[in-house]
Image 1 (cartoon, rainbow, N blue to C red):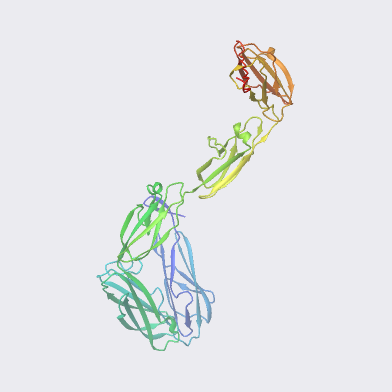
Image 2 (cartoon, rainbow, N blue to C red):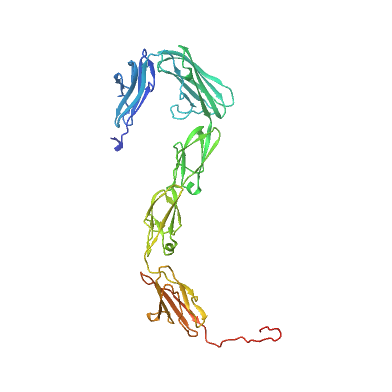
Amino acid sequence: MEARVDNLHRVASPPRLTILSPRDGDRNDLSNRWTFKAEASDPFAGILTNVVWYSSRDGLLGAGLVLEDLALSPGNHQITAIVSGIGGTVTQCIQVAAVTLTNVDLKVETDALRVQPLMLDPAAPMPNFMAPNETNHVVVRVRNEGVTNVTTLSLALFMRPSDGGETLIATNTFFLAAFEQGELHADVIPTANGFYEFRAVVSVVDPPDSNLANNQCTWIVPCGSGSLFVAIHPPEVAASAFWSVDGGPWLPSGTTVTNLVAGVHTISFQVPPGYITPSNRQVEILPGRLTVYERLIEKDQGYLKVTITPEEAIAEGALWRLDDTPEWYASGTTLSNVPIGTHVVWFREIPWWSSPPSQTVTVAKASLTVATGSYAPLPRPPRQAILGGPPDGATNQPLNTAVYWFWGDSSVTGARVYFGTNPVLQTSDLRACVPYYVYSYDPGPLEYNTTYYWRVDPTNDIGVTTGQVWCFTTKPPGPEFTSPLVVSTEDGVLF
């Protein structure tokens, strides 16, 4: 439903309804009459008076904000109040009982005390507190729980500072009908910061109260204000994170708020994207003291590490990437700042290997997630042979030099050996076809001072792999040098 206000359309909210009297769980003697009271309002229509009351035992009781002088039949009743407004209909229910009662019950409830400086609006929704060296107004309530029609009682209120004795600050006598409450008022001027104890005591004059457990209540009320300093960590977050106290304005890290009422306050946080917003925190502000609160903001992210096997696949270009990002990463790379949640790891396709299927991984906050992808080899031509000797580019080699090599893998069934003096070996340079168990070749007598080029092309059932071209140079021509042999006839030593 919508409402029009100043040519603007607003969604109408449902009305508000509160049953003031009786309270849920009230019991009244059959000889007493009941008074029902409620508050009802509509955001657009204002105060509503069309409250309708029903009893689960007696049916329709009447309509209006107040129903007086009502008699309920004996037993338990569910009382239902209903009100309708522009935004809909609201219902509230309470449970009461009409019974025969013989005992008196006067009660001081835990929420019966109200203390705040006189200069403040008494209707302001603030916790109990006092300002030092100022006039503070105190109100305490006592309630007749409906046992008898009229009860005479006295109510006394005492105050005690944390470092002193108790003092009577007010007393009065009340005459309360069923469900009525009396209020005792007093003004106090505390002289120091700290915590003050208030104690209210009820004594029944006529008739006597048989339930003395709720005739007394004690409260602790702070006096004075305090300050709050909030620091946000780490520094890279503090620059763009904010905090507020009790729903106030957003403040940067390192700000101090002064003149906070002593007591419990709520801190809220606002953090940049990629970080976890902490839940609200409650802190206690002490009178005349600075409270310091520090908060570490955690990343809304985790870590991901992906390992690839086997090493042979890594050597031939196996990589991985995350989701739809274009970057490829090497095996063992750990990514930080990965948003928490589910992601997909993809593996790069490389020749002669079967790539692992994509994997769905879940990254948790501030945790390391590890994934592994295993490539499987496919049938392929053999890998290139590995040079054995002589070393590539070697010089001054003898004329009877033979070449040898090692196989690059175990799939080799044989090889084609090319040997010649042309750097670009041709088909005519094919000198031998050898089986897998032969891994050397002797070209026979070589020429002096000549560079020879050679290549090994391994073969298997899949195909042939062209090998690398290696070379060596033979020694230049020249006389053979023979050391002279001299024999000593004296000691037999050779020189």
